[in-house]
Each structure stands twice: as structure tokens, then as C-alpha cells.
Image (tube, rainbow, N blue to C red):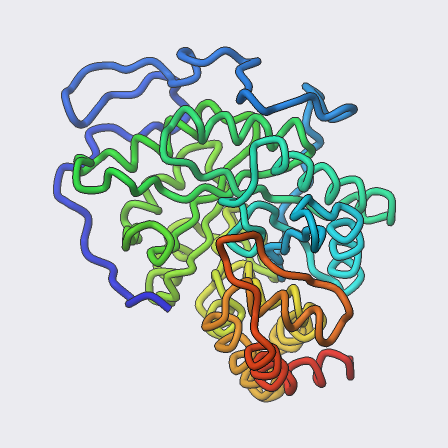
Length: 374
């Protein structure tokens, strides 16, 4: 878990907040800039992109985000070829929905988004959406990880996510050229993406994945005023930051819809803290292994049974620490050991050794036992 840094925002970084306006004043040079979407053709596609059948250019059906447990899903591959195993992608999505999670996220770190082509990303999202619909889970929304290193490609990802059946985009800040960014570069990035995206976006704050960039509460609160920015995922683990954002945005909670803004903890090992602090729920990778346990913790909190919730969260937190340490390699190994599917990650991630497999089995044993008892 990254350090809980929340430095104050630079004074004077924001000359104008976007609000509902399509034209924005640049804090950097004082000039009026047109919306970024003007620079993109609505049909721009990446070279390896192909049509996504019935979802292609369809008007999105907006499924509302509701408080609860969201899971960033794992991508699965054929063992010999590393081709996508879409049958397992579909079955896994339905297993999670049956466990009671309120939404899924494709193209996250657990989904090995950085290992997928544009077309493969769309195939995973489309398969997930269709599997949910075919199983009767029409109301379960799908968020799609859409972060990229340029504003232009991020917008492309958002458009492709929409065409593939995604309801929302989850967007990391770009980081490759971090030393060259101005004070307001990331604010402009999120505003430009939000203005051009056909689906609403959530800000993804995960310092460990973006060269240590840690968006503070002032920045996220400012960005929350954009009409197409509807939430945030805080994998920084900073519950003070979460509390400030939730209070300032009047975030949606199980007992009060508030403004509708979703303030989500980025790991299930602080579910109790997230909900007590006014959060909307969690998006946590451990839900791939133990979705019922994650949902049960949330149910206990909502019922006011904090004593049992804390006891159960202790088990979940120990399991989450194993997942944090082993990443997607350990998560897939545990799925294979305990549920008969999972496989291995794409190269260059190494397959687990026999010793690794045994260790992951031990590390997740307590959690899986609880999961299978529910």
C-alpha cells in the first residue's frame, strides 16, 4: 500500500472550474481552449480495432452505480497460446454477480490491461457485458479501465469502452512524462477526457501504478464538479482523503443517495473504514477470489453489526495482504488451486513455481474457507 500522502494543492493552480461549460480557461496561459473532442473524429479507432457487433456505435444504456462491492475482474488466457479465454471470462463474471457484487470493472491491473491490445480489451468488456445480460444481471454496471499516456488515446479507450458495452470509464492519470507536467496538467487531462468521453468517468488514484502520482483531496474535489466525472477510486489507502472527498461531494452511501458521486475505497482491507468515513463502497481485486466474503462484510456494516463486520474484515484483510504481495500471479494461482480455473498471466510475468503455488494456497486458505462457508 502506498504512503498516505495528501499534500495541499498548489495555490492558484486552477483559474477556472469547468462546471457545465464546454469552453475552459487554461490556468497555464490564460487562453480559452476549445473542448478536446473537437480535435478527434468521433469514429477514430486504433489500428487493431474492429467492430464490436451489436454494441458498435450503439447509444449506451446507463446503468446506475449503487453503493456496494465492485470487483476488478481477472483476464484469462489459453495456456498454450496466451489467446484470450473468453469462455472463462464470461463464467467468472457470472460467478461474481451471483455472489452479490454490485458491479464489475474490466481492464484494471488484475485484468492485465497493459498486456492487451485495443481489440482484446473490447472483447473482454463485450464478453463480460453479454455474460451478465445472458445470466439475467442486466442492471449490473461495467466500468472499464481507460487510462493511457496521452489524452487522445485515453479518449479513444473511453469511446471503445462505450462501443463494447461499458457503462463507465475508470481513468488513471498519465505518468510517463511526470517531470514535465505543469501544476495544472493533470486537472486539464481529466477535464479534457471527461468532456470528450461518451460515458461518465471515475478518477483512479493509485500512486503505485503511476510513478507515485498521488492526487490530493483538493484536486479530486475540484474535478468532481465536472458533470461527466461521477466518482473516484482511492487505492492510495488514505482514509482521511476519502473522508474529505466524501464530505465535500456529498457522496452516495447505502443510506443516502446524496449527490450521486461515488467515493470508493480501492481495496477491501479497509471496507469498514471506508463506510464509516462516508464512502460509497469498494473496488477490490480480492473479490475475484472471495466475492461472497467481501459482500458479507458490507452487508454486516449496512446492518449496523460492526462487531461481526470487524471480525470478518480481519480475515479479509489478511487475505488481501496476500493478494497485494503476490499480485495477479497469486490471485490466478489461488483461483486455480481452489476453484479449478485461473491459469497464468501473460509473459513477461512469470508463472508461479511449485513452491509459489503452495505458498499462495497457504496464504489464501483461511479466506477461501470462509468464502466457501457462505
